Each structure stands twice: as structure tokens, then as C-alpha cells.
Image (cartoon, rainbow, N blue to C red; front, side, top):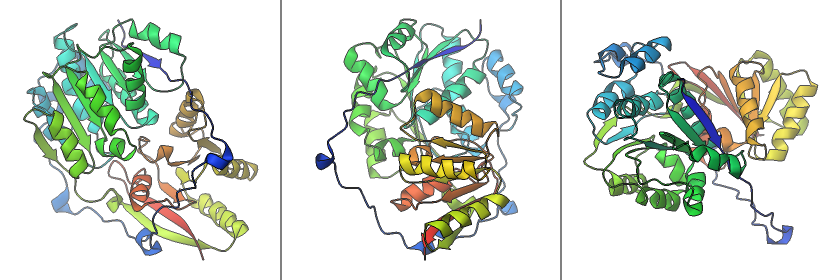
Length: 395
């Protein structure tokens, strides 16, 4: 029986505020343009990773071994090499690693192995900060669990409530979603977490940045105290540490972070004078760039820029929170499959966009914070490749 996943969506019930009650736009922090200029750091021979294990060494289900081999991967990344043995041993794991380092496989293999070994007795909840990251986690689980007969639910926006209820009625072994949507189902009493014995919070720092702290704490209080937990984060500040240690049980910390996400990204600024000059310089840059992710500030500006570039002959798609889930998925797939080589997005894509062959990130509009800048340009320079980032700055 094949592995099946169903999407569980979210309705948009937010009311639009009248203009006179709208909050003023957040202008963000001042970022000195010099911080947007940095050469990539080349790996030295001493920094080349030598793993202790091969995937064939891990004592997991034959089905998992077969699916791992089918994916064509034999050598674990640093986070996988150190986290998977601890996870298979039943330990709680805190993983500190840059984005693009293979964290999903690091928690997926121990979780799936436990579920396959104890069918009907182990269930897993995985939380991620964005729809896009949750969807990518789902895809990874689906490929690793192919042929297992397991069912999963993806709790993100886009599908009607009746469809959500129908899928939850199947008692999925794996539930993946964002904290807001998961909490919605708890409030509706349509999701019971009392039998979920496995937990993963992916990109914990980003979820806290997005204001999900209360939702996460509520969700975790609905789960059994006796469980195995995985926490993955790029930063381990006080707020992240406090959340993890409140809910972890004698965890082992695996830290393989080797510097900033930006270390493998060549960074520079492009100075412009006026709207026409900015647009022309963008077009000139795109003539020589490969697979490019462009960040703009608002949904309207993203669509305006996409239309302008399409009129000039570029293969472009757009991604932002104003699109339906099916539109967002289609845009991601078009970009991933190279049906388009330029994707224009708001910061909805700054995290959760795991496409390893993005060569260029362009900040057509500078981000509001330097942390946002780091997350944006971290979409390039993945899987050991050198990326390029350009930030437009008015002269």
C-alpha cells in the first residue's frame, strides 16, 4: 500500500480593517549598506566534512533503507551523521544547524523508523513556521515512507474545513503543519494529540520570530509528557532555549553550525537612481543570472514587478500570502522544475523555500531587519554551492 498524504487547509476569516484604523507601516531598523557587501568564504581542506557513518550503517527498517537508496543518497550531512544515531537511540535531540543542511532527513528517519516498527502505537507531530516548509517536509516524509501504507495530514491553509475533518477521521500517523492551523484544530476539538508520542519543531527560532510562542506552548501541553522530541534551529538564543528546555527530556545537543548562513554567498549592492534606473539594472542583472529569487516588499509590488518583467520577456512567477495555496504550490513547482527561472516573492519565501540550485537572490527592496536579510540570502549558497546576493540601494 502506498504512502498517502492529504492536505488539511485553513479558511481565511481575517477581516480587513478600515483604512483609518490600520497600523502604520513598520519601517524596520536602519541597516548600513556596507553590511550587504561580503565575499563568500571558500571551504578549506581542513573544513571538508568526513562522516562517521554511511546511511547503510543505520539500523533502520529495510523499507527505509530501500527508499534512502532510491533517493541516491549514501553519505549523511553533518547534522544527519550526528543526529540520526541519537534519534534512533530514543534521545530527545536539539539540532543547531544552518538552513540547507539536510535537517528534515535528520529527524524523519528516526521518527519513521519508530512508527514503522510500532504500527498503530506511535504517531508524530511536526511543526514548521511556513506553509512552504511544511509542504517540503511532507514531500520528504512521503518519499522516505513510500510503500509503508502510512497516512499523513498536512495542516496548512488552502483547503475547506469539510476536507480537513474527513482526513483527520483517518487517524493519520503523521501530522505536519504550522502552529496556527494546528491550534485552530485543537480549538475546534477536531484534533486529538493525546496519542502523539513523537514531536519535531523545525526552525524553532523562526516560529518564535513570527509570534507563535503561545500557540506552540498550548499545542505541546496537549501532548503526552512521555514522548520523544526533536528541536531544530539555526540560532539558540535565550527565548529559543527557554522553550526547548521547558519541554525537552534530557536532550542531547548536536551543533554543526559552521558560521553564518551567508558564508557561502557572495554579497554586493547595486546603486540606482530612480525607478526606471532600478528596473533597467535589474533587467541587466537577470540577463546574466541563472535561477533567481527576487524579494520585494508587498503583494502589490511583487505582482507589479512580475508583470513588468514578463512584458520584457523573462520567465517569471510570483509568490506571496495573497495567493491561494494551490497558486503558491504551482509557483513553487514551476520554479523548482525550471519552468520559470525567476521567482518574485515577499518574505513569505525567506524561510521554508528549500531549492538547492538557486544561484542568485536579489533584494529589489531591502529587508526591514538584518536577520530578515540573512534568511533571504540563505536561499542561495545551499548544498555546498556558492551563491550570489545583490541588494538594491538608492544612490
